[in-house]
Image (cartoon, rainbow, N blue to C red; front, side, top):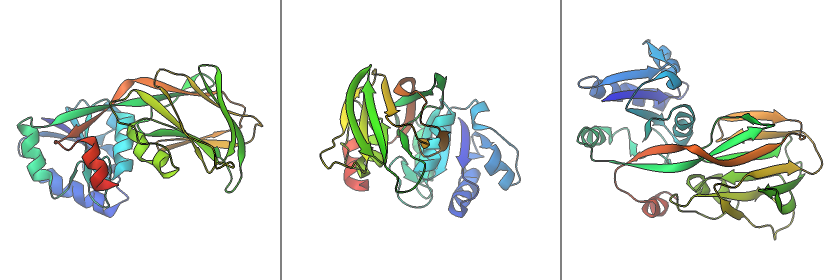
Length: 265
């Protein structure tokens, strides 16, 4: 198989994890390291976007997995090298057995929806978990309007608004009281961060809906994509989210969504 390998070179346990994996992969398989981790290890590499591989091994935590899913359309196997991650499938120590199963094609690929985000019509990187529009300053509340297909869903005062996929429903959305949504459901979850009114509730809309989050009183804010990329906004921009045609392809070895919730949450 042709494997791509990505990890955050600034995290010691991620670097060590890659070094532990490479001898196993080099015996039978073609391996391409992403540029940053390759340079850190004194090897040649290339950008993740330019790799022509069968699968990307994302070594680290959920952040590394989300970054990989933003930059490649290949299947991604999350390999945990530190703290428990919801999107990672195996640990570094479990990888020898995982590699054996990969070679025998004893795995499945869970395809989840992504969010296509535009700002004033300009397409930004797709999100696997969520797009978050929140205040640019700490402890500053904003007046938001949430629209779906040009229909006003709600007006509310809050620190921010989260638009999440079912995959992302167990992440930031869950921490603010939003619902868990089965990843087989084609939907988007809209939830508020620290709403002024306790009665504010999350809303679930079809993935095909065009969700617009508007500031009723334009002020500076930040748009954060999967926690990986921040875009500074004036507050006057047209920010829209909808289901993307691209899919997040996560390699799995059998545990279903509800067992992962039971074990990891």
